[in-house]
Length: 109
Ligand code: CUA
Image (cartoon, rainbow, N blue to C red; front, side, top):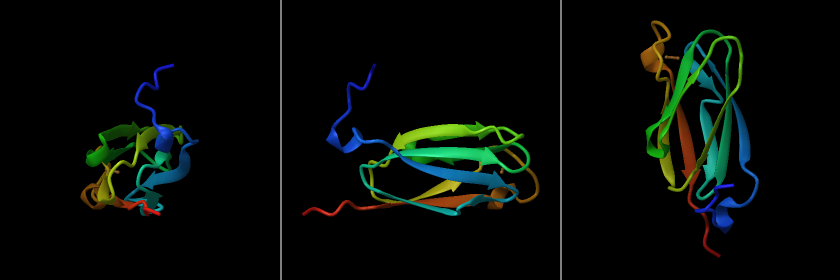
């Protein structure tokens, strides 16, 4: 066990979001979470090899062909809108293969 940095905001079960990568986009194209939430993206490819990169949260993974799921865990520690890009060349539409991670600010009450 190595959750040394765990705090109450991250101690709960992660929000699990299934994402399908395919030529040339992500499904859903927009992923919405809340600041401080633990997020688990379970990404599968509907066709060939793709990649998932979210620079802000140091996410960079390859999604293999064949539908094998890739699990990506991170904490949405900062509110804002962060591009999700495909990091593996996958064809003519590769440059347009983008999604968006929307982290809404936690309401203080
Ligand atoms: Cu999908 Cu590049």
